Image (cartoon, rainbow, N blue to C red; front, side, top):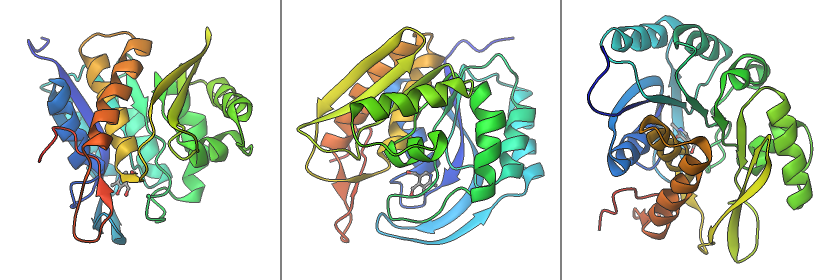
Length: 261
Ligand code: PXL
């Protein structure tokens, strides 16, 4: 039986600050109008300014969280965020049914510089997770890591995206948030070529923007929008959440889907 409402699942780490991870994913799912579900891969202790600890779930804990919720609800789309280890990547790929659209946000390092994916897991991300992905959403450092090339301009951004697509991902969105220029330009690369997704660049970095974008894309896929349209609408959602970003007393801004004042 399928549900009468649209549902989306995030498989990601917890960020208690509410600025990234499953907390932002769930806010974003609510913002785009889908029933949000969350499987936790790791607990972190962090604020928007720093990560002080990471505790990774054992693989069977991740597997059991996914398989039990699947007994009742088949999500319309799934996203992955922080996966931490090779074991968790394997557990996710083995437990998720093949026919559910999957958005992979290849989280590697937090905005504050903390490692969120073991180096040894990058191989399985490339070999088993990306071939299963409907959409992959690397930022520039992640695209460099996955493609093995340095990105210096639009041409190398496209080259990196094409190399990642060759790993088996359907669509790659290389996010230009770490670049420069008055516009923040993301490049969507698929078998038809390259599409530019643009928004005005805000003069600040925001904690959690990658989580918000990939969750928004997942939420639109879950509602039946096509992949390109989901990415375009996702860019609108994250741009608004960045415009409305708010900061704690440490000053680092956090993405704000839902626009809390
Ligand atoms: O923004 C990447 C990210 C994803 N998931 C968790 C995080 C972060 C960044 O800090 O903490 C749990």
